[in-house]
Image 1 (tube, rainbow, N blue to C red):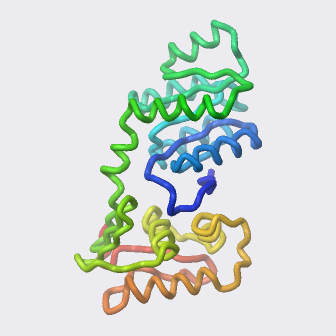
Image 2: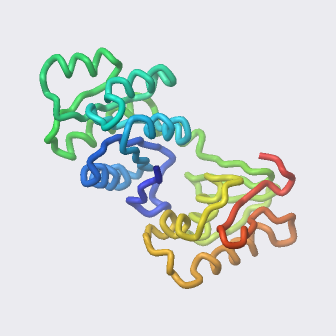
Length: 244
């Protein structure tokens, strides 16, 4: 499932929150709230895709519905706990009976909120879980991305190649950051527009081409190229030396 782009990329920290629920309207509201808090929301609509996505995005916290169309929320929670015993999990569910609360808490949920709920309460509880887990500090400590001789800091928004600082505009930085979060992966124009410009419209003229051209002029100029065009598919960034 894709990342939900609820806030401009320049506002987001490296904290990742996985939202697991099969109600589209609710996941959209939660995604916007998470993005507005400055975190990166990821969405899964069922238990199996949630487990797959969790392995890929390594979330700092999970908001988990107790009733999913395939696996039960408690089953998902137990599997998440098996793979990461320290992962903070906030369960959301319409099942408010004491036995259901006990099931969720005994399976490893850190907190439990029943539907309907106030979004402010959920966000306060989620922030508390992240704070106690030290997620903000951990994310800041691991916000530097390295690909070959290219480095990018999400916090300081500084970029260097082979130790030489490279000055980028805000959107050039967001574009490079998105590419570096998916190294060696071909990203389509629609994906890039959706993430970097927070738009669902692919027909943004030659916007992506213009920014890729500008970014190449700064990143690759006089050096072995890292940003490549895959004709008919999109763009990919790879280490110039073939490394990671």
